[in-house]
Image (tube, rainbow, N blue to C red):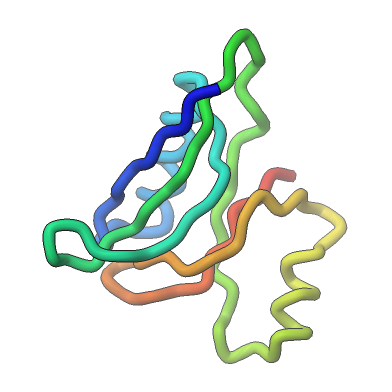
Length: 106
């Protein structure tokens, strides 16, 4: 199993992040986690993916912003929706704004 760490721009839209992850997964990787940090002195997004061998691509990942104004219980309810299988939850820069984002498959 190989691990891939990818740095994504903080200025990309949610749709751009989702599209990039889907393309990466189509090439044999699977999203594990997302987080934020700095690369070359600039705010950046860090994605961790693992490489799958001889396995069909997973159901396409979906990204959704979870409103940070929601209480922790409300956020948990959104994450545990019956129609989705949560892969990861964390912060991500979207359009240069720090957002709570869930990655899920449905």
